[in-house]
Amino acid sequence: MSARVDRSGMEIRLRWWALALPAAAFGALLLLLVAGPQADAAERPLPMTELLDHVHTWLP
Image (tube, rainbow, N blue to C red; front, side, top):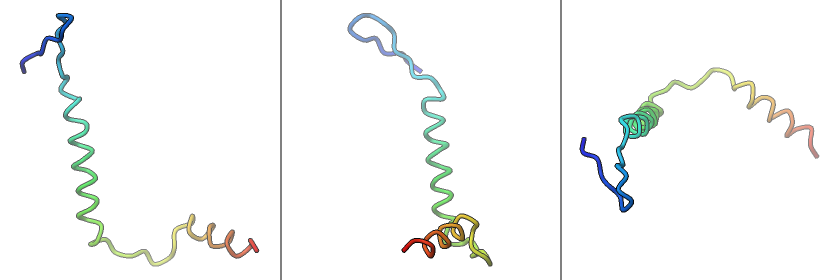
């Protein structure tokens, strides 16, 4: 990988993880997006959903 030199003469190098981490995050999110419609629905609602439903019924 070639290094760039800025106006002050300092060498600017891009580290390998500066490209690898965003690429891995993008790949993981893309995988979740693609696999999402194929997921089976849960038989019962999540606990957080139940809690929010209870709070909604208690509030006027």
